[in-house]
Length: 398
Image 1 (cartoon, helix red, strand yellow):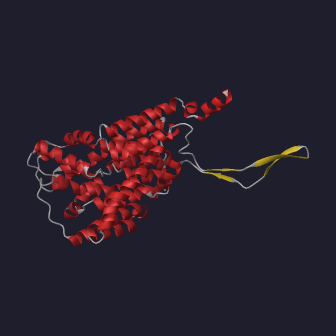
Image 2: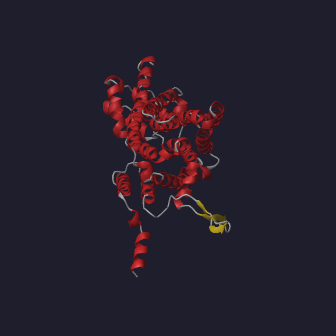
Image 3: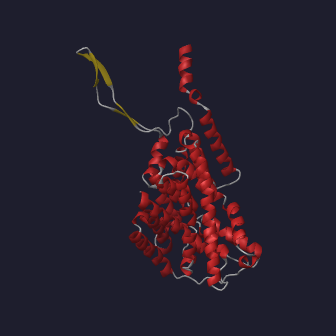
């Protein structure tokens, strides 16, 4: 009876519970608290945190790899023991979350998320003011400056590229690139990317105010022109062709983003638009979040590298915001004071949160100001920009 009890105890998770696992369980609970109570990016942080919790439960083996068990037998021959295969190999299935993770490893989930984003996005403000594309490009400064910083800290090129993409404030892009270049860093990079996206209203305003004058923040911009249906339908087609020819490695992300947008703007596939923007993106978000969180095991997460990634992520996000604002100041000068530099901070692709921050900061300085639609131009440009930046890094290191 005692032996049975001992065996039972050894089969429970308590037998394998150690300090690293307890720390990871605590981190996952903190993330759940931030997502549920503080409402920090709950749509992603809840599945990510719970996936982290599941994968760090000892003995459960939810992230175990598929293994092949080869039955063997020892026989005596000429006084020596020889191992021989006695029957066909037995394939042992992996853990449930390991199968979910294949959607990330094979680069399936992030492009599907992009298709859903495209189905929800109105590129009208960007089409009405094509110059805002430059602000979206300038906001990618954080990606490449952080890439250099990561290299100086001793990270490899692929690792540095994966860390730098945090500066784009685009979770699916960060996951897509990291799963291709540095899958061992996927957990900390995903957590950092989505955490900073949730902290946009806290991180951006101090940078925006520090880099602009009160006069610049008070600039009231003219209303954007109305964009025709023809322009909106042609835009995703032209962008897909142009980007795919110039940078084929970005075709998966940009192509799916534009496919979703074409669903929306064509007006002839309402069912597909609703499915891509609602049911499909929600289902894939669950699988993506849980599997990404599950990759953050104690062995891969509790390292000095994780702290470095978190610090570099803040710098990446801050530099991206600064790059957009500074380019906004240049446009302010060349336009004769007609462009409010605050819309430059929306060049990071946290849609539509970054655009809302531009609106809030601008309205505090001038209550009659309405910058939201002007900020949406660089905001949606940032989505394209981060995907293109990921394509550049993928073409170099992929």
